Structure formats: C-alpha cells, structure tokens
Image (tube, rainbow, N blue to C red):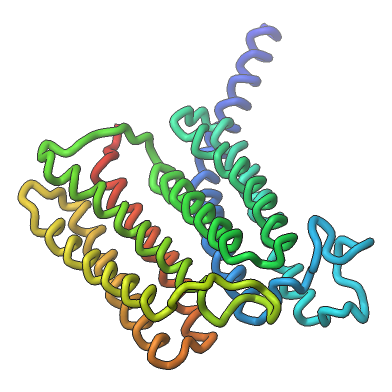
Length: 305
C-alpha cells in the first residue's frame, strides 16, 4: 500500500508541476516578447542619447570594472544609460531560461526549438554587442545587432502565439495566397533592412566619433519610402484575395494601421530633420510593424493541431 501511495504521490506532483508550467507559459512568453522588443527600443535610446560608447569596452564597462566608475571620462549619464541597456540583456536571459524550463516541464515538444533559439540568440546578441562596441559603433555592426533582434522577436512572437495549444504547419489551398504571404514578409524585412542603412548614414550615430556609412541618405530615404508604398499596396492586394482566412484578414488590418502610422511618423521625422523623440517613436513603430507582419505570416502557414 505504501508503494502504491508513493507512486500516486509522485504522479500527482508531476501532474501538478506540468499544470503550473502550462499556466506560467503564457505570461513568460509574453514577457519574453516584451523584453526582446524593449531591447530594440532601449538600444535606440542609447544611440539617440549619444551613449553608445558610455561603456567603451566589452565585456567590462570600463577597463578594470564591469560597472560604471566615478569620474569616468565618458560621463556618468552616458555610462549608466549604456550599462542599463546591458543589464536588460540579463533580464532577457533569465526570462528566456524560465521559458525554456516551462516549455520542457509542460511537455510542449513543439516549442522546444523555438525556446532554445532564444537563449542561443541572446548569447549571439552579446557577442555582436561586443563587436559593435569594439568597432566603435560601426554602422554595419549596429545594423546586424538590430537585424538579429528582429529574428529573435519573430521567434518570440511564434512562441507567444502558440502558448495555449500546439500549431502545425499548413499551406493555403490557394497558391497565390502562399506566394503573396511570402512576398509580404520578405518585403517587410527589406523595408526594415533599408531603414538600418538610412540610420547608418544619418546623424544619430551613438557617439560623435562613430563612423558612418558614406551613402546618400536622401536617396536611401526615397528608396525606403517607395518600398513602404509598395508594401502597403501589396497588403491591400493580399487582403482582397479570394479564399483569404478571417484570421489573416484581421492580422492584415492591424498591420495596415500600424504601417500607415509608421509611414506618417517617418515622413514627419524626415521633414523635421530627424528629431530624437520622433526617431525613437519610429523605432518602436518598426518593432510593432514587424510583429504584426510576422503574425500575418503565421496566420497563413500555421493552424491549430
């Protein structure tokens, strides 16, 4: 009787642990997505305040110390802004580890790879962040740092969208919809990539001595704007296609509203001479647009199991 009782107690403990893991999976994936997105915005804040080299070395903040030190030549404000952004990476890492534990404890095999990519991606971000600092904010290093964040945000969005139940890969019965979906996410990514080139050629380098891309920013801005118009046109065509699912149309509506707002902000910041507050708002907008675009993609290629 004691043996059966002991086995039953262990089974109840396992079932309780699995239930708790499933319950915390939703808030953990939401926190992970929030922190991944926040890292983009705070990274932009570092650049816009000229604090990119507030910690002039890596992994230490300044030679001999992992934290800012009094009377640091870069200035206390710049040093703590950059150091605060580095600390956010640790919060992100702990959120990713907690998510991985919850995924494994809840026996969600379909989420294991996605969850683990967050941890590996955060380590890669740390390495890229170090390269960015050690190359004195080379704009290509800064851009690659941002693009990696974009991919990690996509993975975190996938995790969060599948938090309640497994999804399986699917494809539309209309080949044209599948093609439009692939083109839509590719064009969104292209708009973002060209945006990083505009930024790398613009005035907000993160430090007065940081190198810049020697590209014509006006021509790049025209290309960037033209691609946004093309993206909105594709979105309208995509929305009106026959055989479109309700979930996809709903996601496209959200995407269209965010992209229109983002376009307006981008135009205003351009004619106003890229003031810092509008640039920060535009950066936040690009993150939200990307999340919305990825949700459109997921609505086409995934369905509940």
